[in-house]
Length: 114
Length: 117
Image (cartoon, rainbow over all chains, first blue to last red; front, side, top):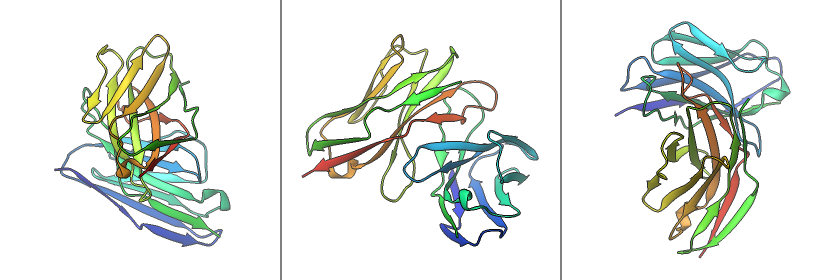
């Protein structure tokens, strides 16, 4: 069965520090991968998605970037964190084969920028 | 652009009773999907139910069912025989079905459901 791993679960970082959040999917090949952010008391907002290695689409302009160095690995990064980058970050995947598509989420990372 | 609106910030239901959560959406696409996700205090996003827009039949998953009114762009979730474990935030979401974008969902702001014993 497919599983998605996301770490760390909690992260506290000072303003101006770098960021690297990692997500990996097991049990599937060539998934579509997604990074969502949930601000406090809000719904989810799509930040990036990837349909293949090295292919990144950005949905909103921001201080963050994403990379997909391997088929089942998706990384969210920042060179210098801002206070506004605080939030709950969720990685997700779909099979990408069309048809009965369902979006499955990782357990999330709570990022606090102080 | 797609929008999803959940007009009920909070709802409450007695254990074993039935509750309906409302959702309206707007999209210019003809091929799209609608979802309900549950987010318990653990904050894990759990897929509750999924509906293809081209299907007239309402989706059901055990105690969860939807009332999909395509013309009205309404997609409500009915929870029957409510259980304490149903207490959570519920998010309605809409996604278009093309290319690699099946996971590009627009989410509502959520409805917090409380279940009273």
